[in-house]
Amino acid sequence: MDLPRCQRRRANPGLGSHAPDGWKDRGSNLFPPAEPAAGKAAAEIKLAKVLPGKYELQQRCIGYHHNDAYAAYLEMGSPAQLTRAQEKFLREACQGEPESSRPVEIDATGEFHTTLPMKENEVVLLELVPVRAQ
Image 1 (spheres, rainbow, N blue to C red):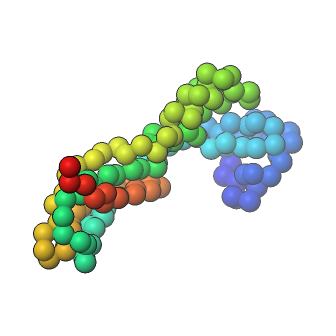
Image 2 (cartoon, rainbow, N blue to C red):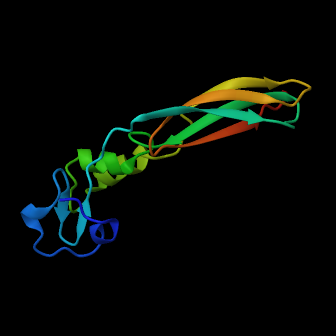
């Protein structure tokens, strides 16, 4: 049974066995199952007018098993009450640290090009961090 989005978050007393397959009935809320993200077309990134110099390109992702406290919560069995250890684990699962980092040098043209593989329902943040001369 597929419920409209507006009914997924509304109280569902007595839903019990009528919850859609894979969904968890937690009293007044339904939690959909975490599903692996399907691949999508690569995103082509083109920047212009970047100041010439050396940079560190940092990539952060939010998506399935990338800074994803929701999937981690489901994998631990969707406890109604978290222990301190479980709460700590979930906080650490979504710290937002860069997943990758690589040096980049921008020449006098000020242009930067890269291609990113993308997945469904994924958000990617690219940040060019200037490298300070030491």
